[in-house]
Image (cartoon, rainbow, N blue to C red; front, side, top):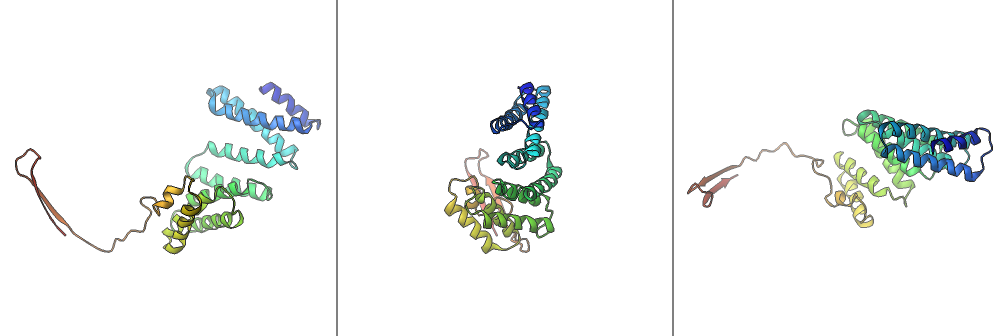
Length: 231
């Protein structure tokens, strides 16, 4: 498959590629990328290199086609798959921002916005910092400009969580209620149903409520226990 794909690349280089060949090159790129995740290490590396070359050729030499932005988006996701932690988050913000600027008419715009917002949210170190605010603004852009996007459940849920952290409870609840009312089959439904995931609700830590409890096993066999508590 790699050899056949490289022959198609040579056809691209000489400008002799028809649309059906271009589509075949693109599909070869997708299939080789899939093999890169399924095969053994050496074969996987080879498949990935050829897939990346195929997709880059599609984007660079046929930038005015509908496949160029698809190829670029796949390349972005491919690069991010090999990164973790803050490095991945920084790369996500950079790569998705570049993608949005390069392809403003792409049908992947909502997906790129979500990826960028999640990267910014991951870089945030405290509520209300620059990354936190920019992430919230990016989620809002996705919600406002793509009202039919299947990604709105995630965008609204994440927006709700961030607003809750900021103390803007009414706005947060409005997002959660929308998810519950409109996106009943989404993976975000459970989070919205609970209002917030465990551990994110504001903590009231300025009150002290001591409690005392006693327990006495009357027979020593655990069957009859005397309990008392106060507080």
